[in-house]
Amino acid sequence: MVTIGLTRPRPELYARVDVRIEAMFKNGFIEEVKGLLDGGYPPTLPAFSAIGYRECIKVIQGEWTIEQAKAEIRRVTRIFVRRQSNWFKESDPHIKWFDAGGENILEILEAEIRNSFRSPHV
Image (cartoon, rainbow, N blue to C red; front, top):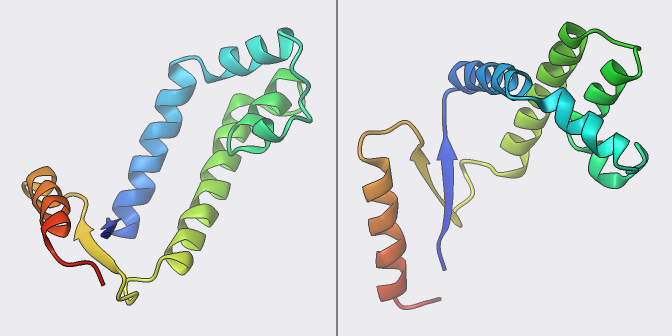
């Protein structure tokens, strides 16, 4: 078995998060959440505790603006990014780390995975 970790420099990761949040809202995130609520799903469902959903609910309920929701999603996502880096340490000998933005990363990862099936398991 191989455990693969992907890394990015923190500023690059944060920039990608910002782009993703903007895209989510542009592609109808608020409307998606509103549709779920209108469909009878209560805002107390555990699924609505995922990052972004409770913030959208506050927009729908008139408590926040979309910009406030985006700012909060950015804030809690950055906290989550920091937690992940604490959970999955680059010093962990069981994880093989790769630069997610590295050249030919998909081919490198494929080779690593294929090689792990050929190696004797410990």
